[in-house]
Length: 164
Image 1: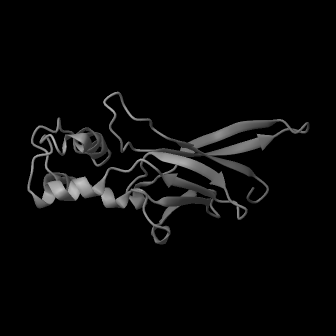
Image 2: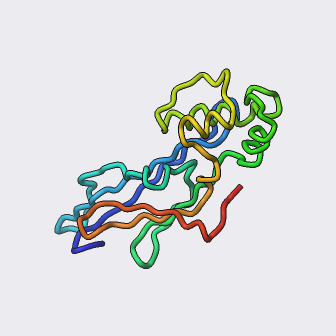
Image 3: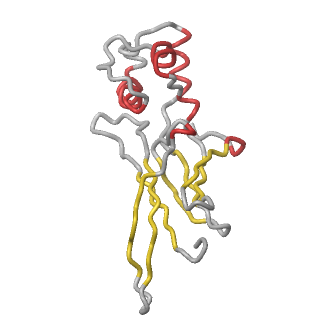
């Protein structure tokens, strides 16, 4: 409730795909809710929340409304950054059997950054250097709030630690 209007955040988690990989881009929407004289609630305007200022959100789960009228969520399915860094340290192609578990997830993640690849020659270094992707940006609690201009604002709470 802000300035007499009712708002609702809705987050969408993406499930693991059929190959069992993780690390999917998540989504968050802000809806304005109207209420008639009888108390019936109806969804009005709905728009996606721009999560690009925090590098996007990944595999969201566990959303809750706070007593200070914000939305808390958590990125619960982040890509295993230890495997990503091990591949970078060993300068290995992510098709290597040890690293192939994260390759499909990274290929899908790179689309968010405008990089489309089949992953055949993908390395941790090329993913990081060519698109700016890095798995340590994900796995955190995020908070969404509504500005005085009735727009959504998102931030991550890094001090709370990283899940993964």
